Length: 298
Ligand code: NAI
Image (cartoon, rainbow, N blue to C red; front, top):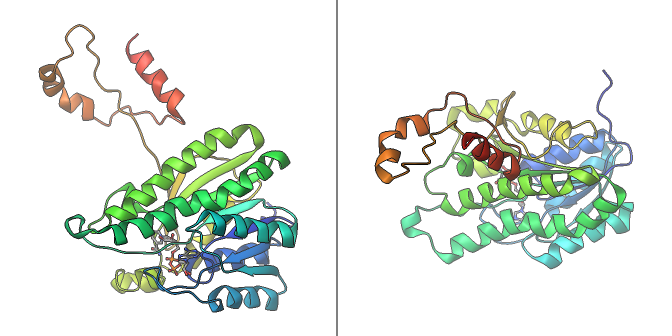
C-alpha cells in the first residue's frame, strides 16, 4: 500500500519544541503537512518561557525542505489557544489536524498537593486541549474534516503515585476525546487519544535502563496514522512505547440483575459476578452503555 501522505494538510502540534511533539512535527512535515510548531519553551514544571525551542524545530523542518511556522503562545489560556489557531489560519489558510501534546509535571503525593501544583497542570493539559481545539472546531465542521489526537497518559488511565493532578487532567482528556468523537462524527472529525511511554526530558529520571529503547520515534507512527485521512477509528485510546502499540478500552461486565430484591446484601453476595470480566462489552458511547442496561433488564 502507498505511504501515508499529508500534502497540503495543516497541522497544529502543541508543545512541539522538543520531545514527542517535535518528533510528530518532523514526521508530518516530511510527509507534506504544513506545520504550526507551538511551544512556550518553559521548563518541565511549566515555569519560564523562550522562543528558541519552537524556532529550532521550524528551522529543522525547513532545512529538510518542509513548511512550518513557529508559535510561542501558551495553551493554558483561551487567548493563547485562539492565537495558535489564528497562526495556522493566517499562515496556511486552515486547520485539519490538531495534536494536543503540550504538557508539564508538578508531581507530589495527594497529601501534599497544593493549588499551585493542581491548577497549572489542569490548565496546560486539560483546559489547554479545550483552548486550542475549540477555536478550530467550527472551521473543521464547516470544511467537513478534522483529525485530533489528545495526549493522555497511563498515569491517569491506570493510576500512578504522586500524580493526582496530572492523572485527573490526563483521564479528563479521555472523556474530552470521547465526547469530541460523538459530536464530530457527522462532520468527519475524528478524535483519538494516546497513552505514550517515551524517553524525553519529562521522563529523564524515571525510565532507568529502559530509556534508550523508548525513543519518541516509537510514538509518532501511531500518531501519524491516527491523524491521517485513512484513520478508521474515533473516540479510542492507544497505548504505545518502544515499538509496541495496543488499544486501551473501557469495558462493562455483564454484571448482575435482580429487579425484585436489589439490596446492599444482594449486591454484596453477587460482587464476584458483578466484577467478573468474562463476556465484557466495550460501548462506543453513552447510548450504547444505556442499551446494555436496558438489555439486561429484559
Ligand atoms: P516535553 O517536556 O519534552 O514536552 C512538552 C512540551 O510542552 C515542552 O516542549 C514544553 O515547553 C511544552 N509546553 C509546556 N507547557 C506549555 C504551554 N502552556 N503551552 C505550550 N507549550 C507548552 O515532554 P514529552 O514527554 O515530549 O511530553 C509530551 C506530552 O506527552 C505531554 O503532554 C506529556 O504529559 C505526555 N506524556 C509523555 C509521556 C512520556 O513517557 N514521555 C508519558 C505520558 C504522557
